[in-house]
Length: 210
Length: 101
Image 1 (cartoon, chains in turn green, yellow):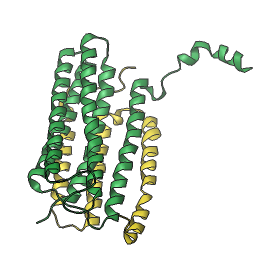
Image 2 (image 1 turned 180 degrees about the vertical axis):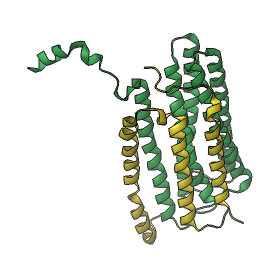
Image 3 (image 1 turned 120 degrees about the horizontal axis):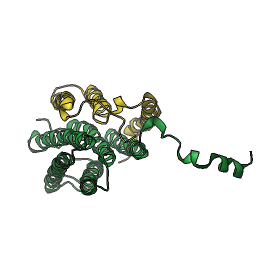
Image 4 (image 1 turned 90 degrees about the horizontal axis):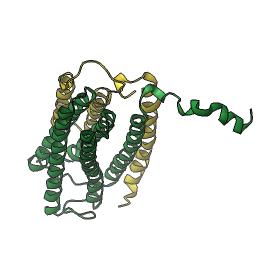
């Protein structure tokens, strides 16, 4: 069959082809985005390890108070926000709109608290003299790698909170569906997973020992 | 086809995973303050982080409820890419002696 005839023969059947893996295209697209983003964070974390190993005087500035305690609180807040996001997904799938919106609201508040704590952590380090290419303790690359990794993560958190606000607005008006809430939840859980690697590699491997 | 997951609703069923994730984060902090040598500490931290990530992917992101073909199409390929990135480690050890910075 010639190419034009083939396309005519396929007609609408091609457009109606079942979704691969029996999931909505939106969800598949979100998974593909998440995996590509995982490679971005992976590259950053590998580069961090590379720089750290190659630098003999890598700083270990993180004291239990305030830095590690702050990081523990941030971790609890972020993991809890993943749980509340699951509440939003479940409620939206059950058609309980107001409950889903409440859970989304709680998740947004937790995301905002995380961002505020993160900025406070940055402010503390900047106050101690950490800049992109200088710090009082050792390798000048510490600041660049620290701010790049945590900054990209913070950007993801802030983007996630904004995305949730947009989704919540659309969902409350009826223009968006439970599927949109679920896709946003996938992204939010991914942000949580990245933090699970950032904490040990960036903070806990660099604690200040007495 | 809005939803591939099914079963009972409510966040109560996620509480065990949530508590486990918090406990694993606590374990990482505990490990950081032990006197393990740096390589062993890094390996332990990464093992805990990978286990935590697997829990979050399987239960929070509902990968456990998707088709197996979905898992096998996406996850091994991503792990392969990340492992290939690991190749730069050899350079980092070579550069240790060259002191480039």
